[in-house]
Image (cartoon, rainbow, N blue to C red; front, side):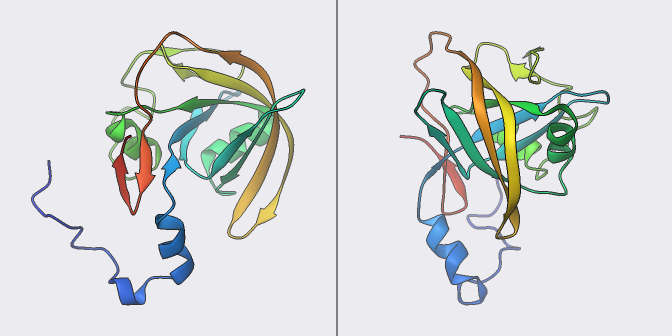
Length: 169
């Protein structure tokens, strides 16, 4: 619930980057990338990503090089990718750092531990092995090989990000 119809802290349209405004007009699937490691698990909401078919299948995505997720991926060489679904707005906001996470990112919800990182119980996910990462714009372009795919039976609609808001189809 919001008391404002619009974000009162948003940068006015005429002061926003034209590239960000263009990107905002392209609906993007919202995913959760997680990784385990010697320390606490880490995660990040990622919408700039592609799943590439092939033998083997691949994943590419843009990740913040200063994020805890990147630190965990770099340390372990692996991570999990989970597509989020309609109604996962708060989960996406929490892992994007836009919503408080008392007790930590993984303190609420049901999680399954995997060799690639924790994944929300009952969701489809892919376990990925890091192949490379390089600077790409203001992010890291992370390339990985898909090593495992789990597809529980679900008919949930995908969570999408479009023009700064979450929606679904």
